[in-house]
Image 1 (spheres, one colour):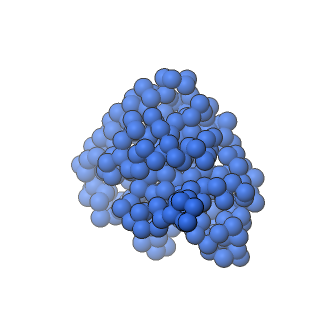
Image 2 (cartoon, helix red, strand yellow):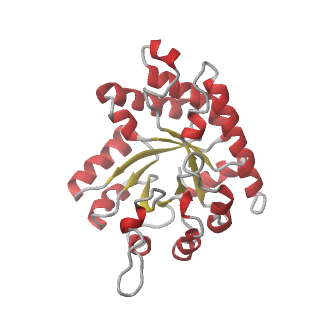
Length: 274
């Protein structure tokens, strides 16, 4: 999926919502535990309920890897289900990979060849040769960690060099030598607020994947005020607030309602550009 197709989906659905599939076997409704594949059964129901209101899904690999082979099977079936039934959805493998070149090449092969996923989150700490193997696949996206939403982001990402450049700013500037806004996005946490202004000074046209809305307390209005571009430029993720909105047999309906609420808020924010 290219940048224009992504924007067309945003315009059509009046939404830039990404539903995070952080599926924890210990948090899904108890009645699903009787299913042969409870994780996939949960995901399928959530996807069917929320697909009209979102433009992307982001399964977080940690939640699937924690269950070993069964988890990987559920992950693969989830990806295939989205691709078969909702082919307009942008799929993000939230894997935060990044290693020496030949290892990154194997990670890239996993997600882009074997699974044929649209994008993968990548950690930039090891530099160019750890990222570029992911950039050799036409039509695929790297989503590079830049300024994250967690408390510990301040430990390194905001440290300054002697010229006053912060580490996340160096990541944004340097990485533009490796790719462009047609195949690279950046993770920018919703809890960072007005720092979206600083991000946009460096990457005015790139899409940003924005976690931290909902359970983590980030403000959608603030993100849009400082981060939205003429092409929207935002994919805003919500995970727990949507998928765990209810733990009864009505969990999918509750997820649908939460996704619909967020979509309505996003439609309001998009009025200035659509």
